[in-house]
Length: 409
Image (cartoon, rainbow, N blue to C red; front, side):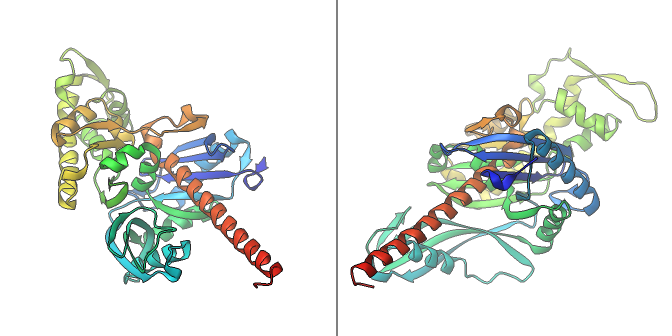
């Protein structure tokens, strides 16, 4: 196996409640990401985004990573990881600094973002992201990129996402026991948004609703910037549990029935369609109406969508998301989910699949891979930022050398 360090490789590791997904991407010269390896495994030991059995999670992660490495014929040493759970919180803050030399430099931008993030955070919390929204220079507001502009004083608005430090440490511990290094923890819905949104949607205003097995993760964009993030600790597992209890079938069979036959709207299902439902305790399987299955599922989807609606309404940005909703995650793929969501939210809704991938993209061209692929996009941004920073340092040194030769040092 070749080493990842020999190529520009990035690993996205999405440890979900139901499945662990590991995706390996290679950065190409044309700035695209080529998928070169994918591994998935049933998640054991996870509940609503949190670790409840460390050893089981370690085994699940190791299996997914091994499958990915085998496909790519490559050994990896570090990953970008997703994190979710009801402990993830957000806040919007601002910071202000004087501008040096009357012209904004990258150092000024770094300073004002640092000022915005300098709000007190409780000792048990961990800072995940500081995402600049816009800048103000003197009286000019709504500036996206202030570098090179003239002024005396600059202010920045930033969106800050934090999480429970212990929860983060447990996830990192799982990865470290697989002899991997966690490059960074990224909020799941933020990662998903990098994979499924277009620039037009971000500018118009859009809500990404990532419906997984254990949690619903939400991120809202307006005017190209993130304004609100939230986690609802209910999702697809509730639907599986309902099917298992009402139809008296094992959880594994309930999940299979949900994936293969379920519909979120009963009006979209024919009364004549029937399915075979396995029984428990060795009893013979029964034949049930698919319409009855939809009647069980529809109220649960209504509950989940109404919780999302309340969260978006409470954020205050419900009137500013002209591009509507982008549903992603495994539970968003169910037949009728988009139609039902449009009925409840009264706005455009689509299912978001990862955009712009090449290589083995057929393995990840699915809403359930949005977070894992988004982690690759996030990793690429970090790679580009390091390259830009290195170039800036090199340019600065070269200017100093030139000045020295001119006698200006």
